[in-house]
Length: 319
Image (cartoon, rainbow, N blue to C red):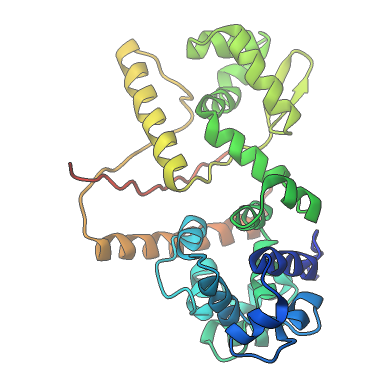
């Protein structure tokens, strides 16, 4: 069954091209790119699709560096004009057969992308990002303001949920506390239970749970909250902030003799390694991640065991 998308990809592409063009005329920009005078007009009108390599040239012409964006989204460090390498990084290890029904694109076309044999359009990348709504939002927010993204009609729900988790590290701790057996078996109201378990003020816990409830991260049943969506997907400075919080929190609880979320095991590895070694480790991890995701997607037992797979690479600069 082909995936139904939530957004008009051509509308997003047109708005994006107009935003990048700014006050420059379509004809002048076409000439700067060495194209016919109406080429940019055709891109913006949807008469002709813009290939990824042309989009990169357009961004370079307007002094927009896409490298930080692709690294933040997918840890991509290669040539930003190489659409095949970007696509391989996004879906490392996933077969064209599996991708085809999820993206609504033929296997033949996906194979041509992976081999770098067929044209890869900006709209194809937007289509791929739309598979994960928070990626589409993050990609769009690199170019647009938040209000502009809303006007285009891009769904920001999942992105805002993740932003809340990133900017409020305590919420991850609260959500994990809700998933412990001791909370599930307790007759206490959730705010009181969590405040006692974590050593937080009850009013602070109530505020966090209220925000989490409004975002759909928890549901309420009687006097108790149940965790609905726990996912941590952080990159860049947010990942460093979150990691520091978890390390400091772990040390505090060790000092206090407390155990948080005993049903889970959290681990961190800190090491020094070359850039090449780091990239090889990341490649191996992404292959493992995609295998794990495939197992989860095809698991027919309908299990209810929460499992957290967490991997973050932290760069530490020498003073």
